[in-house]
Amino acid sequence: MNTRQLTGSRIRSLRLDRGLRQAELARRCDISASYLNLIEHNRRKIGGALLNRLARSLNVDPASLSEGAERALTSSVESAASRHPDTGAETDRAEDFAGRFPGWARLVEAQHREAQRLERVVEGLNDRLTHDPFLSASLHDVLSSVTAIRSASAILADGGEIAPEWQARFHRNILEDSRRLAQSAEQLVSYLDAGADVERGMSLPQEELEVWLEGTGWSVPELEQDAAADTQGIVDASDALVSAASRHLAQAFLEQYALDAAAVPQEALRSAVEVWNGDPAQLAARFGVSLSVIFRRLSTLPARAFPDGSPRGLVACDGSGTLVFRKPISGFDLPRYGAACPLWPLFQALQRPMQPVRQTLIMSGRDEAAFTAWAVAEVDHPSGFDGPSVVEAWMLLSPRQGLGEGEAAVGVGTSCRICAQPRCPARREPSLVARRELPAVAEVQEKSAI
Image (cartoon, rainbow, N blue to C red):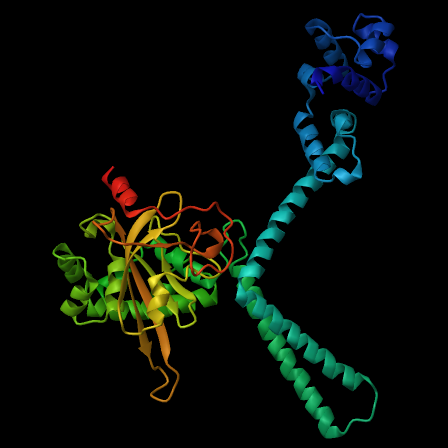
């Protein structure tokens, strides 16, 4: 509806609000009452001079009569009505409603905005609950404790005859369950507070660690200068590590970082990279360390340290296949939640520990990027010879400018849900994005040449 067509309605509403009779307002504006009546019923257009006289008589800005001061308010009311079509709201009269009852219209607008904000929060929390197994397990633990306390309390409150030793046992169970409930609730609240920023989306302690490392350029200068530096002091000095869990992860990371830095000093590594042929095994042999150490040390170097001017990415997983460390690299997307692509060499290395794996990869996406991936899985026995074996796999990612003559590549993605490879033998579920064929080797070479 044209806003000018409702100018008369706004004039009539303002006149009534001020307690003016139609004849009185017409007299003030030097027009007849019958003409004002036609104006108020939107049957006559109003010229500039008359509009100004009416605005002065009603003590309002002329623009509020001609254009409507409630235009944004009207849009909000219409938007609120469109979200609930089953209510039968008269959307064609939204401007009339906003003009005659601006207070009520502002209330509708405020409630509409609050409902939208709450919907965003609920969507974020629902996504977090769906993809965060730690949060789900914590809630399950809290509910289990509550159920146990309620069951024991119901038995004691039943009034039946209970032997003293059984009473003592029930009391002890209630005390222990209450303590566990309090501890679980406290940890859960702390965990939620640490990742409650839905707008940023940071919800896991691992993400806090990665945000902190990204801020330091994935390098720790204190440990590069002195591998024996106080790691706890470095953690305490960080403002990015909020939760106790993220600080624990940071402490463990820095302890490993210190060992790596002592074994492979950064300056010596920089010098070695200048004459490096690109094979991580060559560096591992030169420094007498494992491949995983070289992978981690190469990931700490800035882009300018490499002849191609590109940084290296790094991914790690444990024996369950869960990603435990992620240093992203441009063009190779890493999932924040859920499982990653099963075709990554990282997971193939888990099947043959201590045996290196090398593959050329093409990441599915808008612009397929080529990478060389080196991966290795290593076995540790922290509980001794008779204890369980702990497996951890590491994958180093190096960007490629293209493929060599006749070189084959494996098409991979981030995860099945957003991977565009149509005929993947390891696909778990249909993709949500448009399917896209892996480009032929010749096509990749042609793109890189351009």
